[in-house]
Length: 270
Image 1 (cartoon, helix red, strand yellow):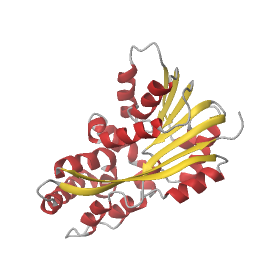
Image 2 (cartoon, rainbow, N blue to C red):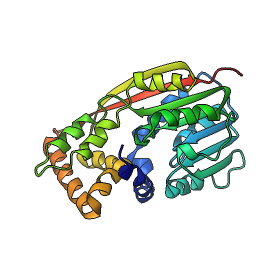
Image 3 (cartoon, rainbow, N blue to C red):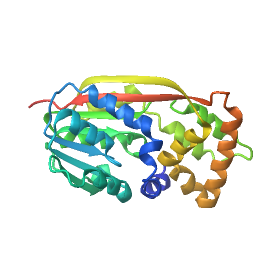
């Protein structure tokens, strides 16, 4: 992931913070399945890395009875949406920070559960990020990750690659580079000192209206286009891509592959 695209992530998510929850509902559902797969019945302290508007951490807190939830994200506007959701609650102590994963203002050995849902693919140093999450987990604590899987959204990559006039190759390349291979993630978790509990891939074929599909891409990744093309060029590209999606869609809608990599590791000890 180029430095330019990484720098633009906070601006992109700030821009799309109000539409994110609805547009990325399949990511929310995947986070719920990750939390449901955790081999524990209760945790007290949760760290949600790249927490966005809070759906992964809040799902875990609700299911596992946690009373303390810390969230870190590079987007202040996403955290503002998170804060709105928990305002007035007295059953959950929520602490939110605008921070990158490698600069999290959290203690080592502090959390029963460290979550990272649909963030890994935007991180320029994924191995270092896994290491930071592993250090934040207490001995015996869990690290749980959800990320785009092999060939995720590959049909859209092919749409981008086939546009005429062509787009800069690093734009479809950013999508292709976002794949998190389960074997690679397993190796990174083990290198960080985690014991693997489970790593698996979920592959689904979905059919949606082209407009709904594009709304999801805008909510989760429009910074990729804006960093390279500027606002006007990004709008032009999204218009051309939507036109191609519409022409490629069948009577029921646009068919695409939705692939997720799931991983759960445990820090030894405890």
